[in-house]
Length: 221
Image 1: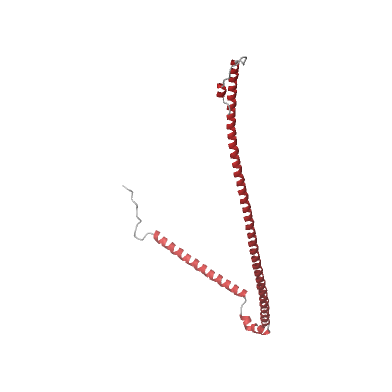
Image 2 (image 1 turned 90 degrees about the vertical axis):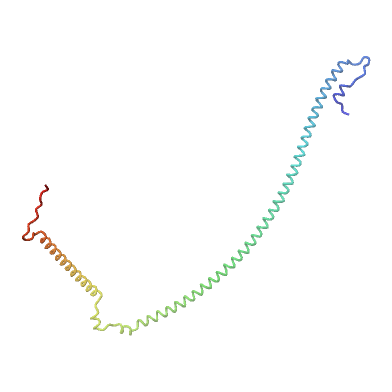
């Protein structure tokens, strides 16, 4: 059983001859009691701190366990995500290869179709060119035929009667100039007649009538 300061304080020793000085023993015991109480107090503090430290250690251990579990979960999630990403990338690659093959096949088919159509157009163009050339050559042969020259050759009377373009233009200019001169003469004649009539009217208004006197203006009263 652990002693307490009270146990030390209440402890009694029997007195014998030639024993220790009782006062010194009591003083020493009082000092022991104080030191013991201090030791007990420090021990309680240490126990308290130890308990707190143990709780902290337990908390940190639990936190470490939680962190380890979180790390494991995160690692598992990262592994699953990486695996899913790899699978998705593989699917995308396969789909892209399929689409590329399909697009390539379609491009080859279109290219073959365009080549075939181009060849067909070239054939048709050559045929059209040959036919057009034959038709033009045939028409040229017809035009170069001497019968056309005999038909289109004018007779001597027609050659004399048909005026040239220069002669027709000169005749039209002379006719237009003659009409403009006649119009100017007519306008001058009308202006002269109008001026004479105006002068006659003005003279008649200014000359007083015979047997009449001009009005005299009287001054105001």
